[in-house]
Image (cartoon, rainbow, N blue to C red):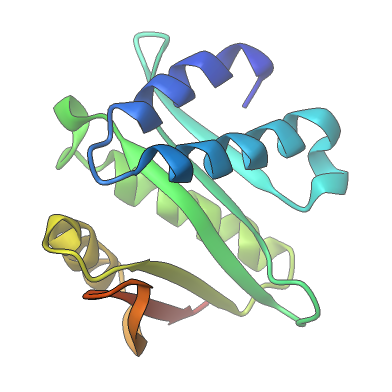
Length: 151
């Protein structure tokens, strides 16, 4: 990812209906941290492009104070490109990169809201297993669901 990709990623995030505005702010902070210090930030960002246009991205990083545990923080694909293998390719590339850095576990946290059902099915289809559900974590009726994959 280069700095020139940030506006397109921000547009993608803002156009993802599942993401609340305050969540987009946090995603932007991670992008800014990555862009300001790349390897020192601990964050890694991959971008998918078609015809020189950003159509997806993933942001991931090591979990502090662990040996080999990594979080997939953010991932989004344009609505027009969903279901075409771009998310799968981005996630697989992130996992390959994590393995190269001695990663052994990958975690994804997401919401239990009905609007996230497609996202949850995607995680399971990529080999992630639900290991935890924390009731009312984000708000009343919105649980935190944690998925894990052994790399």
